[in-house]
Image (cartoon, rainbow, N blue to C red; front, side):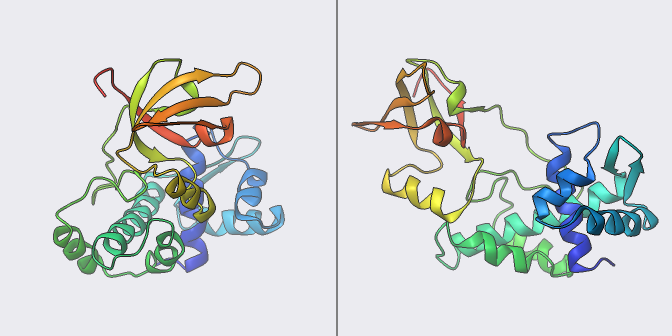
Length: 221
């Protein structure tokens, strides 16, 4: 069994490790969790003793196979709860993250199995993030950030990198969601901003926004 704080650390390290495959520094973990490096060091020692983390001096920490499985299960629960909240309880996609942060710590494996079946085994959550299966496997989707697309390229939004409510509410104002078709009409070299077409509307978006939208490129959109 793991405490809520330990689960949060494992989940956080799992996400950081996807971008830092050689190891995650304690300073990076502290920054991500908004805590002191000394607190991270203490927790790393506890988690290493439980054999869910490996800590190599000057190389940072990494999840063991056991740690990866625990972390992916927490993420699985979080994303299934988000699907449930949106599809069955009519929450909006910008409302569910914080609620799912609380629900992800429920320990009943049987509850999660039944919810997965009840939801017809979804592969992705409302934000386009893949839902790990019981073994931690994730369905891989070929995608790029909108900021990487060139003029006249087209695609479909398949995910958001940023899932904060302010960003999601901004997308709602522009009627942009998972499944929305986009065409890049132009790109400013100076600041990376873009002019895009969504349905019959054209408008500018900043580089910051473009770097937070995942697109599946398709010439037939």
